[in-house]
Image 1 (cartoon, rainbow, N blue to C red):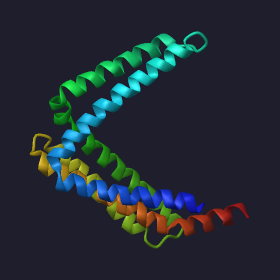
Image 2: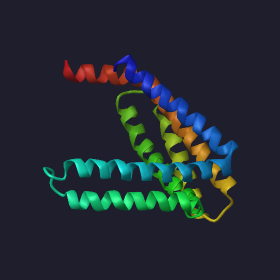
Image 3: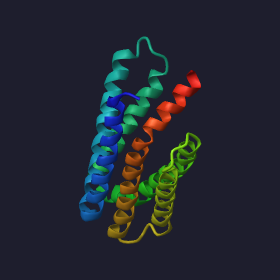
Image 4: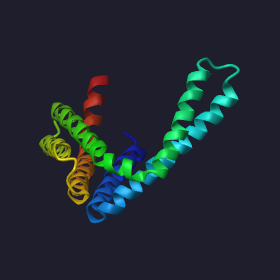
Length: 183
């Protein structure tokens, strides 16, 4: 594995830990900022897709469906920006599902780490289980205060960041495993 790849993984882990801390320490701001960013990015994506569609409609198939998709994204982006409350109310559910699914993925990946002989595979397993459980808890009570949900989500994101850093330490095992396979 290239050093650049290891640096990217370490940065992702550190950024996830920072994001988790921000979610815990600033719950209301986190929900508001997330809603605003989702609205903005949806709007910008729609505008970009519309520009692409207009430039390529003469020679790319399905330009009509792409045009419809871009207009829908523009509408949703404007709607989200104008009605942040609707999006803020749904964000805890969306993030809880994301954290739960990511936790399950990490659990599955932990067994790959075990297979290549990484002794810390069980740490990744526990962090994945914790993420899945925290995501599930967030889904069980979506009407709970935003503080509680952002704390659960923040902890789960921190666990994911730590699991990336633990996984980084397994990189040498993966390199050795794959070298032996190709030798």
